Image: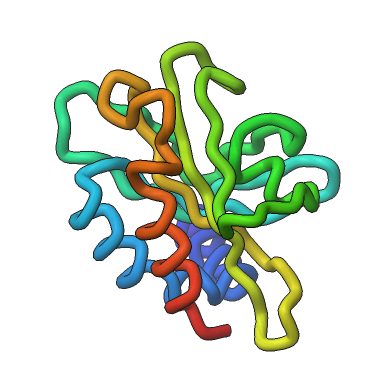
Length: 146
């Protein structure tokens, strides 16, 4: 019963996961890379949705993980770092060999409520993951209506 209750609590707490899941799935299918959704939790960020890449070599961020807010593209977005492109990228910042690009998910009034991220090994995402996947992440984040 404990896990079911926890799952229900999570769904109630993060209804945006239900809204985001189909868009995140389409983004994962488009890029072939892992996709995560992070929300700010105090001075950290929590992964509330994690979709794995189909590649054998993949980067996995388990749902429920609590990560620093001051490193990584999604953390820096949630911490309020500004971007002219709509996306932020990170290469080897939180974890050596990992790259990511993230865009803000905003509520109707423009408040940042989450960060949508594509991540994977730097060998595939390159040292410029924003150039490769930034526009796709921005478009997916913009599709999310809260």
